[in-house]
Image (tube, rainbow, N blue to C red; front, side):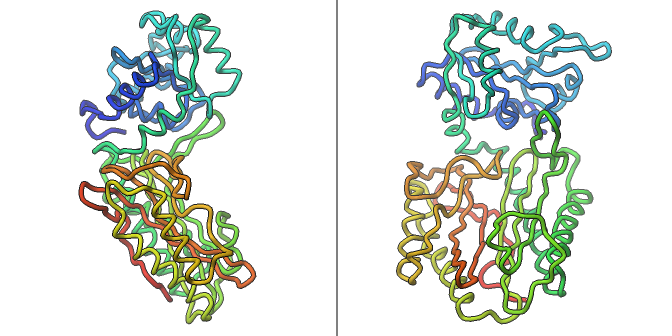
Amino acid sequence: MSLETTAPRPRIARLKAAMAEKGIDALVSFKPEHTFYMSGFNPVLYSHPVVMILPANGEPTLLVHALRDAHGRDEGFVEDTRAYGVWSTTKTMGPTWPEALQKILGEKGLENATIGLEADSTPIARWQQVQGLVPNARLQDSSKLIDRCRLVKDPDEIEMARVAADLADRGMDAAIAALAAGGTERDAHTASQLAMNNHWTKNLPDSIEVADFGGLEGGMVNGLATWVLSGERMFRNCDNSIARKPEQGETCAIFIWSVANGIHAENERTVGIGALPEKRRRALETVLSIREQIAPVMKPGTRLAELYEITKAGLVKAGYDANIPGRIGHTIGIGAHEHFSIDGKSDVILEPGILFTLEPNLRVPDQGVATQISDTILITEDGHEFLTKSRGGYIEV
């Protein structure tokens, strides 16, 4: 997936520095997002495990099934790519990944090492299996370590976030146009996905993939996703679009996740169908005003929690103190929803290269009031940049 397979990846240096700080001698990762993060290779379908071995000292090794060998070598940036299993004439290290992994760990002198595994995504059976391969090694949870390193994006990741955001903008424009023409939720949904896929098909090079990350029982060949919810259905937050035409005076939410070479962007808008009742218009205007208050502090050195505190204060001042959301956004990148939330408890300090979504929102079910407005934002050296740039503010069709 990488545009420049030989380009340096600062994330590898960040990982190694974090490993040294935690006393971890090597990372062994099976999580699709993380094997991609450390190798640049996404097989889309993970019916055979992909294993990434990153020692604190020395070169990384990518271990793939023989079926994925050529693919991994073509798309990944790890020079030492090995294969296991049986597939045609491909030379492998053995018939199974445990045998191959055991040999690699032995080669790297890690039999008695401290090895990091992601406890939040590694099944107990696999954890025990790895421990059995190196019984004298100490296995340690590396989940939070990798999540922290993912916070700051590398130049190649930022470049792909821009591509993903542009795709999302095109999808949003098409969805709003479909609603303006009197379309249903499904009409807007389909128009959005068609616009994104048409742009990818006709204007983006073959080096840009829109695949997402799959698992043992399926793959995600196309990760350009839209869903549209209108009226009371907005309170579901996520559901399949239906053949419902939004009624006059209702609000309609458009949710878009796009992806380019494994990096995601999010674009969400609330659209008023005709003139809105005062309570719905007021909710939207309140949220839009809060976003303007937040904008000046979206810069390096700001506590992520401060964005939430500004939102909470603004909602209380507007009389919505009973409707404070639990969070107003999240980090984004390899995951459409990465692990750090914009809430009152976050200890993250903004720095250049951090990507997040800004989505102060309101849900007042007994008034039929719901808002959903989100943009993908990059923290720069001296401030911030909105990567999603489609029509914002108060939208009425």
